Length: 527
Image (cartoon, rainbow, N blue to C red):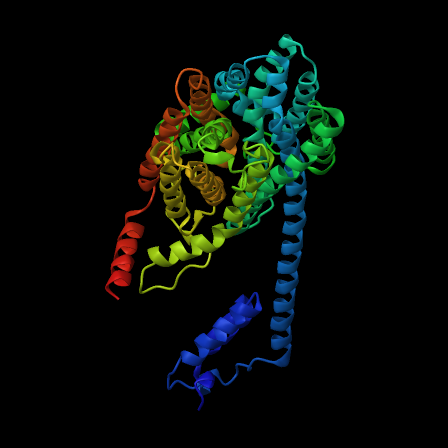
C-alpha cells in the first residue's frame, strides 16, 4: 500500500474543501505524501462510506481556477489603483520641481532676501502644522488634495509678479501647502490601499515607486523648467507649474474616491477631537514620538541641504587651481553646472530607490534566524493598540533606515573634513553629495513604510502634520542661520542630526533581530 492511500478520509475531504489555489494544493499533496501509517483508508466499519468521486475532483479544480481568476482580478485592480495614484503624484512633483528650480533665481532677480523669504514658508508651516492634519482628516483627503491644487496654482501665479506683498502671501500659503503635499496624498494612498483590501507588501511597492517617480519627475522638471525659462524668462517655470497642477486637479476630482480620518465614514469628529486624539497618541506611544523626531531630523536635514549644496560647491570651485574646467560638474566658466548637478542628484535618488528592495533583501539575510527560512516579504508581529489590522511589516526595513542614516551622517561631514585648499575638494564634495542622494533614495521608502507600520489609519494625517512641526522648525532655523554662520557649520548640524536619527532608529529594532544580526556577522567573519 502506497503512502498516499494510507491517509484518512477526513484529510482528503479537508484537502478538497480548503484548497484555494495551485500552491496550496501542491503543499497539501506534499504533506499527504509524508504521512505514513498502517491504518487502511477504508475499514469494514466504514464500508458504507463512498470514496472521493470524479465530481469531487472537478469541484476542487473549479475552486482552484476561481482562485487563480480572483488573484488575477486583484492584481489588475491593484495595477489600476497604483497607476491612478502615481500619475497624480508625478503631475504634482513635476509642478513642485519646476517652481523649485528657479525660485532662488526669481527672488534674487526681484532684489529680495532669498533666505528670509525661503524660511518664511517653513515658519508658516511650523505654526499651521498642528491644525492642518486634523482639518484634512475631518473634511476628507480627496477634498484636501483638491484644495492643495487650487492653492498651489494661486501661489505660482503670485510668484510671477514683482510685488512683495504677493510674494509674502505666496510663502505663507506655501508653508501650508508643503504640509499638505507631504501628508494628504500619502494618507489618501495608505487608507485607500487598505480599504480596497490589498496586501501590505504591495503598499511598500507603491512607496518605492513614489520615491523613484519623485526623482524622475525632478529630472524631467529641470529640463522642462530650462526650456520654459529660455523661452518665457524666469516666470516660465511657474507658468508650467500651474499647468501641471491643473492636470493633477482634474485627475483627483474625476478619479479619486474620498476617504476620511475616521474608520466609519458616517462618524463625524470635530477638528478639536482629531487634534486631541493625535496629541494623545504621540504622547502615549513613544515609538510614534521617536518616529516623528527621527523623520523630522532627516527631512529637515534634507530640506536644509537643498539650500546649502549650491553655495558649498561654488566655494569649493574657487579652490581649483589654473582654472581647470575639465573637471566634471563645472561649466565652461569654471562655475558649478547647477542644472547638470541637480539632474545627477535626482538620478542618484532614482538609483537608490530602485536598489532599495535588493539592499533590504540582503539585510534580511543578516537578521534572519539561521535555523529558519528567510521571510520573503513580511513578518508577523504582536499588534499594539493603534496599529493597522494586518500586524505586518517588511523584513529589514528598520535596519536599512538606520544604516542609511549613519552613512548620510558621514557623507554630510565631508565639507567639514575635506581640505578646503585642495585642488580636489570640489570633486570630493560633489561625490559625497551624490552618494548622499543615493542614501535618500534608500531610506525614503523605508520611512513611508515605517509610518504605515506604527501610525493608525484613522488619524495618520493628523499625526504626520503635527509631527512636521519638527521639520519646519529645523529647516527655518537652519536656513535663516546661514545669514550668520558658515556653510560648514550648517553641514555639521546636518551631520549631527542624521547621527541622532541613526541612534534613535536603533531603538526601534527588536532585540531578536539584533541577536540574529550579531550571530550571523560573527559567523561570516569566522568563516
